[in-house]
Length: 114
Image 1: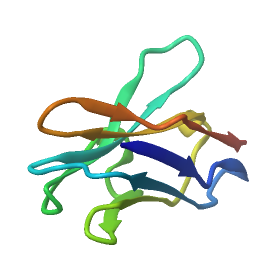
Image 2: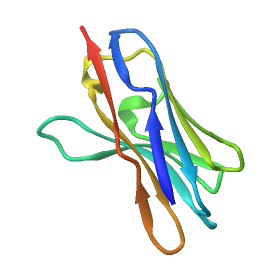
Image 3: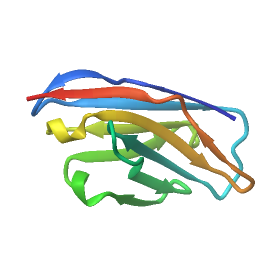
Image 4: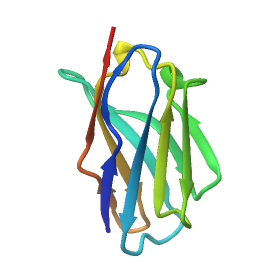
């Protein structure tokens, strides 16, 4: 399985971005698809996750602003990010937790200017 993330960029505070992550290969089920982020000097943290296309959870810091969704029978993962703030600046990674192992995408940079 390979994951290709895209959609990052530079945006002003209050703006929006949509990240995409396309998975190639057979993932298997049950699985969890999630977005993580890592800011400079900080640990990687979970942003949002969707479990087997149904159960969703968000980090408290993004609730009400970010929306995770999937499409194409779980092969595409999205993260709609609204009302962005400078604290959202980080490299964003998609991850798939499959029955046998985890897979990570290459990361996409999101920079929010104040």
